[in-house]
Image 1 (tube, rainbow, N blue to C red):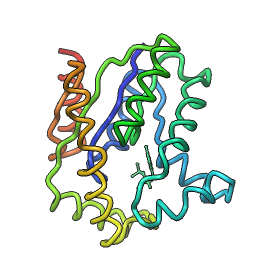
Image 2: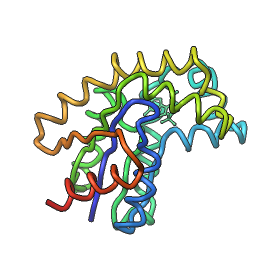
Image 3: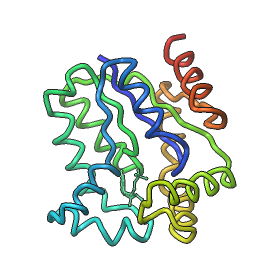
Length: 188
Ligand code: AMP
């Protein structure tokens, strides 16, 4: 069973690398961002709760996303393993995840932290705005998302460093170069 966490600022390439890893290891990608965007689109209760935060580039409350993950990893398609893409994003989420995994007896293989300089992130996200038309890919929201990452999510790097499973990987380069770095790191 291969369970992975991908950490990195918005635009670091987590989603792209998660898709490659899914195929490589036959596991599922769990993106809280994708789940929330779908809920907003479907105008569900969850979507209504999340929309304002997402439009501003702020984090959706911890309790909401923790509930999503707890339900999702209990689904049968997660039996070979899963990649958490965009979760956890706060220390509180990481602590909640630890207890969920412990209770279910699920091991974490690695936490991969993609490192990309700010200027490169802004460039990529503005490019994605043109291509995908995501509501939160505009310059003000992008700046806020990077700030929120530094304040709320970057502390997770120290959090997982203590567990010994943190792998820092440069997220600069082509998709193939980065996926090879990930492969080497996981298979060495
Ligand atoms: P992402 O697609 O991962 O960049 O997420 C898009 C937006 O969804 C974020 O800016 C947050 O508003 C929200 N979101 C996604 N994952 C989380 C999470 N783990 N905790 C809180 N908010 C989240």
